[in-house]
Length: 162
Length: 146
Image (tube, each protein chain N blue to C red):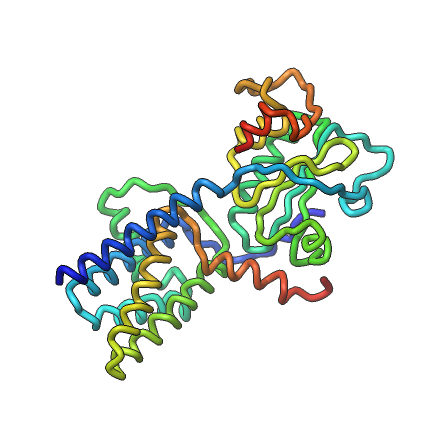
């Protein structure tokens, strides 16, 4: 009985540790490289977005809907930001090219479609906002609209993303 | 390039998590008290959700009963196929565990049961559904015209 209790507790502790580790990673932004092309994202040549949020999604994926709602809310606030949603199953080769292993995966690219940040899972709206807008956002609901995506080499921003 | 949503049956994610938490507790208690018959019982409960649909799962029904008794939890809708697939995986593993018990391999039976308990506990605690992730991952490789 004591042995069984010990094993049972060990399973609970292992599960809790796994849960803790997963929560630490889930939805966190990390620096990323590469560049999308306009044709891949369906962005017309005349369009000049300041930044692009690219979500790789999947049918039947509930977390993808949450991420989509969040980025669409942000895009409604910031007309200079484009949102592109890609079905990873329908466009598998594109997903593989950008190393998408699970959905949702969110990329933040700057105006010339260079990828700056990526996050797998469900980042909070505040995390998306601050990663997109930089440290000047400070919780303002309608930032003063400098939506340049800062380079990941900026030490302050790199720290925030972690 | 919008995602094609389609019309899918929805389930309450909180109900799925509540049911997962309940089955994790039952399996752990069964292990500690060495009541192996709880493993096939849980296999049956999980299997009902898998075969008939999650709305017929006794585990989900237990959660809904708890809500009626005053548990204050909202409804968090999600498409049914991923959690139903996860339930199918749980059913298969618990079914194999039950067969192991019937063949006298109790250690193997408990290892399989505790594996399911850990994954169910993870789902209940964090919302991370490993079976759903496997489903979504496999969808990409089953999709035509990639």
